[in-house]
Amino acid sequence: MRTDFLQLLKPPKFVDEDKTRTAEVLHVILLTLFVVLVVLAFFTDHPVTVFVTLGMSLSFLGLWVIMRHGFVYLASWCLMVFMVTGITLIVYFNGSIRVPAASGFVACIVVAGMTLGNRATIGSTIAISGILLVLYLAEDAGKLPPVYYQSTGFLQWATYVGIMCITAVLLMLARNGILSALALARRNEAALAELNDDLRAEIAERQYMEHALRESEGRYRTLVATSPDGIWQTDVHGNIIYVSPQMLSLFRLKSPEEMLGTNIIDWVASEDRQHALENVRNVMRGAPSIYNKYDFLLKDGVCFAGEVSSAAWQDADGRLNGMISVVRDVTERVRAEEALREYRERLEDLVEERTSQLTAINQELESFSYSVAHDLRTPLRAIDGFSRILLEDHAVQLNAKMHSHLDQIIRGSERMGKLIEALLGLSRLTRSEVTYEKIDLSAMAAAIVEELRQREPQRNVETVIADGLIVNADRHLMYAVLDNLLGNAWKFTAKSPHPRIEVGRQDDDKAAYFIRDNGAGFNMEYAGKLFGPFQRLHTEKEFPGTGIGLATVKRIIHRHGGEVWATGEINKGAAFYFTLP
Image (cartoon, rainbow, N blue to C red; front, side, top):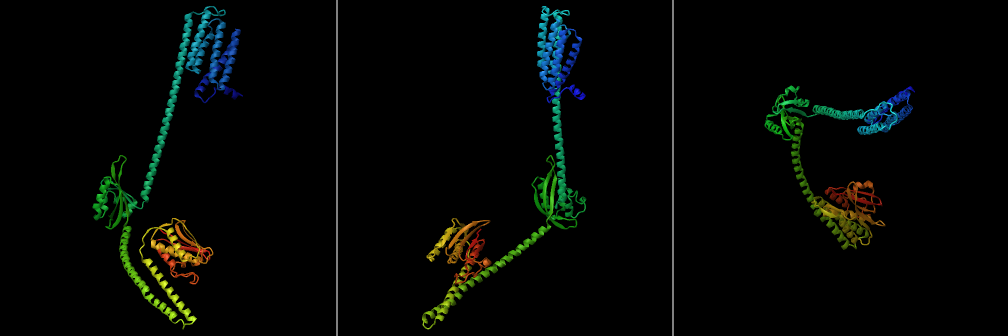
């Protein structure tokens, strides 16, 4: 209970500082007026004065409650109205403006100045002056009740009013000074806070820069210390002022003092010194960083090959301070390059030798092909011819078995002739030059299929050829590829009830062209033998052929830099794929 009572004696606090200051003043005024008027009510003998005094004290208490609930300026205006009304009534019922209560008009002006501001002070001064003038005129005209005190003259009354006005003006000026001082203090406080913020930001930025500088210096030292290359730093005259540990290791030195103060030209071999001197001058003149290769001298006179990258370094004002160079030992690389150069020379000689050997081998192959074309064909023609003569001239003397043997000899010689022609064709494909041009495989495949239909018009084979199969290849060789693949597809679909051949392109990881059929197919276990010469997976009686076609396809595709492969399943068809660059 005591704590709550003491809290009521303290002025309230609000978010608005001006409102809080006004409440503090109003809190003291209202409580003071309440106490004074209550005491005055007990000591006065005039009943009207007692009634008015008690009424005003209760009014001030109510205003105090309103003020504590946040209605500070409403309570201030009500206080002004109550005070002026009460004081006017006291003056009126006492019959003269000289009664002590008349000094309350000055208190009203003080309250207005302290709580409501300049305009309220001026307004209250004017209003109270008017009220006093009316009371004075009423007193002078005898319109007031009987006078308890001696009447005053106009000069005394005017002096009293002037004092009140001067008091109000001084109060207003004092309040303005206080408010200006508070505003200046606030501005100074804000400016000081802003300066403190700027100072803290500047300090933080400087700390950050110092931290970044320490980090940068640490990275630089770590980089220099861990770099596999040697680093040295010179002044504008080329004298060494810093060397890294790796540089000492390159020159087989124990301490930096052995190199500091010397000129970098002193460490370059004599045959490279002039070149090194010119490069140093160019770098000092501001030339961009360049790489050079010198032979460097060790203390024992031994040289090592070094690759040098140099650049000028400047201070913060842009003045040239010297040069920084990075030296890398490239002795092993130089030796490797020399060995590679010698190997290339030997390789060129070896390639020339192998080329000569291959040329001779190709000539021998051409001679062999000529021998095959002529020397083997002659006995084959003789065998074929004499067998036919026997069949034609001595048919009566030969029995059925002899006729069968002679027919087999003739067919064998014909087959042998076809094999020789196929081998010669394969050989010619290997030696012929590849001429690249744009080819429409779709049109070429359609023409080949039409030729196959004309050879066997009785067959009804469904063919599907995709449009727009354009490649860049040799026309003659690609015709041979499609002729062999489509011929095989046509041949191996002869026993299919509904033969179908498809030519197209699939775009997976790499574009591939394909010829697919639903013919005899093959076992994938033997897929590796398909593209070898004379590697047949079917007998001559099942499907006739020389066994050279797929070998021809493989050689042509490989000559173009492509790949060829096949997939199949017995009695379910096969698909042959090839790629071109």
